[in-house]
Length: 184
Figure 1 (cartoon, rainbow, N blue to C red):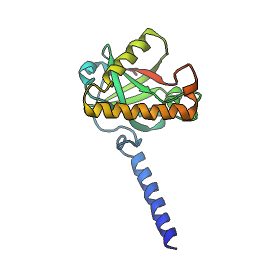
Figure 2 (cartoon, rainbow, N blue to C red):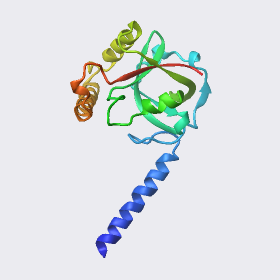
Figure 3 (cartoon, one colour):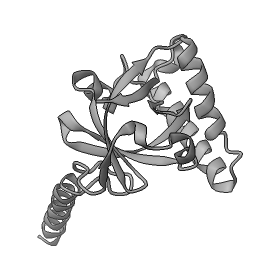
Figure 4 (cartoon, rainbow, N blue to C red):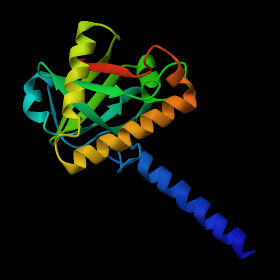
């Protein structure tokens, strides 16, 4: 009987926590949260993205899903880019890029500002992809200190395991997706 009570309490705690996080103003730690509500609403072009590139993360709401998550981002030619490095196509994992395919509207939050925008998929092999990906690699190369190196190593390990689990490691085409943020 005690085991059933403990299991019941745990189930209620997880359900309550999940409901609370899904209504939160943005993501909570590594967990997806609710829509972004706080922060001054500004235009995409009004921010100095090159200056913001020293930040490692931003928060992104996928408007059509009413969920938000914390993502690494990078900047190339004063334009922000976000990426999903895990297998985002033909894999077994459902990732946020599939949600963007249905509705590309987003809201970003960084430095206390909210920005409405859209995500545009940058195709593999294009000059823009190569240059923006190089900027991302340089930013997250681990040369920024111990924390950056540890985060980059952990991220690389997760991506490698994900590619093995989905079978992407055996395919020639990369499974990642890179997106340019544009005004809405």
